[in-house]
Image 1 (cartoon, rainbow, N blue to C red):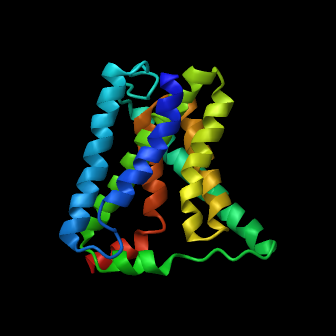
Image 2 (image 1 turned 135 degrees about the horizontal axis):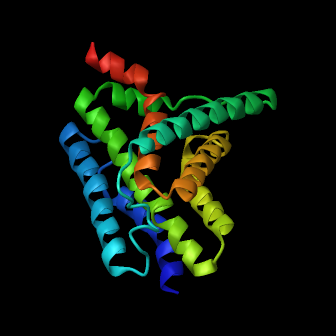
Length: 214
């Protein structure tokens, strides 16, 4: 029961935390800084608790010793995710669905300094990887004995909140989450998925970052 509670409750906890923190679109730079520090610090504390106090072992949650190969596998997973996202977008377009960028998000980011944009990327990645990969997958695996079920729940929990960006965004995010879940299960390295997710998120924000540097 403990593992079921951890696996199913952690996404809810993350959603509640995000709702309690200042709105990243409308808050001041100082408020966004506070938000991102919380989204980095609290998941790290959560991972420490998981590794030391929960039924899950450090190895199970992906806290393996860093290896140089993590960088290569992370980059490969990011490229795979991007390629599948493009292919999914093209398929959706062929079926009449329009995938559009969230102008409100990009407009808000364009007004932020470069260092804060980078913190926004890092905060999103660390909080999501700590919950959806490092927590949900091993907890559901241990509770149910099924890696397939763990991947399915992790990927669905990761994708569903993105429906706010439009219905067409759901399958794209689902595919990306599936790649991240797969590489996590295979490598059992949280660092690999953090690298992959960071590179994946940096691509659509690259123009905003370049603009902020100019």
